[in-house]
Length: 458
Image 1 (cartoon, rainbow, N blue to C red):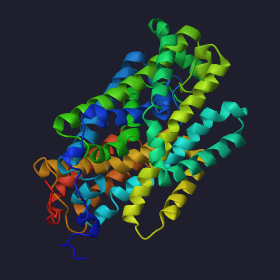
Image 2 (cartoon, rainbow, N blue to C red):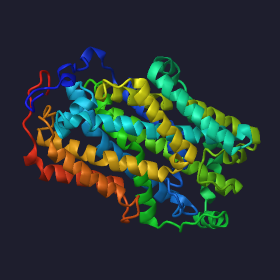
Image 3 (cartoon, rainbow, N blue to C red):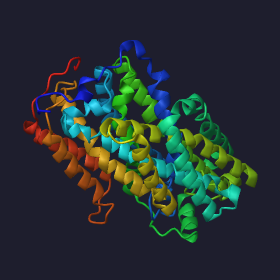
Image 4 (spheres, rainbow, N blue to C red):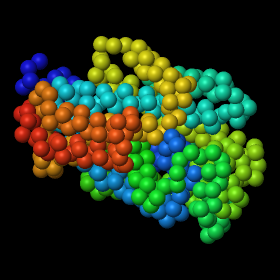
C-alpha cells in the first residue's frame, strides 16, 4: 500500500446514516450516565484515588471546595475532552479508529487511537474485577483467597461474554444502572440531615486516628485532586465521544448529550457521594473515604446485612460494564489484528486483567486513572486542534504517519506519566497532557501529510 492510497479498512468504512440516529436522551446521555453510575467512579470520590489519601480526602476544606472541584472537573470533561470528538462523530458518522487517521495518519491511525483504546480496556476490566471482588468479599468472610478467585472468574467470564454474547448483556444493562441510583438516593436520604453540622477538622482528626498517612489538602489541593481524578477516569470515554457522536443527529444532540450525560452525571453521582460521606460523619460519626464500602453502608443503614446486600447489588450492576470493556477491546483487535484469532488476543488481554486484579494494582485508582489520562489526554488535545485547523470539520485521512500527531502524543504522554513514576511532581497531569498534546499539534501542523480523498468525508 502506498502512502497516497487508502487501506482496506478505510475503503470499507461506511457512515452511520441519519435514519439510524436518535435524540440525545435516547442514546448519548443515558449511556454516558451509566459510566458514572458505576460505583468505582463515585465510591472513591472522597479520596480522589490517592494512594496516600488525606485524612479527609477532598473534604479537607469542607463540602463547598469539594463540590467546586467536582464541578470544574465535570465541565473540563465536557468542553475539552468530549465536545470535539462528539462533533466529529456526528458530522462524519464514522467511528474513532477511522476519524483518528486524520490526527495520526492512515498507517499510524491503525494503532492510535483505536488499538490503544482496545489495550486500555483490559485495564478497565482489571479494575472492574478487583472492585467487584471487594464488593462481594463480605459474603465470603472477606477472605483474601475468595476475593482473588472471584476476580479471576469475573474477568474471565466478562471477557468471554464480551467476545461472544454481549447482545444478551445489553438487554439487561439498560435497567441495571437503576441499582446504584436507588442506593445513592437511599444513603443520601439517610445522611443528608447531618450536613449542616459537618466539621472538616473533626474528619481530618478521625482520619489521622484511623491511620491515614497523607496530610490535609489545602484549597488548591482539593480542587486539583478532584479534577485529576475525574479527567483521568473520563479520558478514554472522551475520545470515544466520536463513536457516541455517530448516533447524534445534530450539534444540539452532541451538546445536550454531554451536558446531561457527562457533566450532569459527574456532578450528580460524585456530588451525592461527597454529601453522603460528609452527612454520615456528622450525624453518626461514620468515617469513610469509600462510600461503597460494605462496612460504611451497613453503618449508614443501621444493618450489617443491608451493607452486604448493597455491595452485592453494586457488583451485579458493574458486570455489564466489564463485558462492554471486553467487547470494545475485541472489536479493536479484530480491526487492527485481523489475522489473529480474537480468542487469542482477547484471552491474552484477559490474563493481563486478571494479573492486575489479583496483584491489587488495579485497586490503585490514582495510578490507573493517571495512566489513562496520560494516554488519552494528548489524543483529545491533538484531535481538538486538528478539528479547528480543518475549519471545524474532520479533515479526512492523512497519508502514512502524521508525525504531528505522534510527536504530540509521545511528549504529552510523558508529561502525564512523569508524576506517576516519581520523576516529577506537579498537579493536574491529565489536563497538562491534554494541553501539551494540543499545543504541540498546533506548532507541528506544518508536518501534516496530505489528505487522501475519501468518499463521504466532511
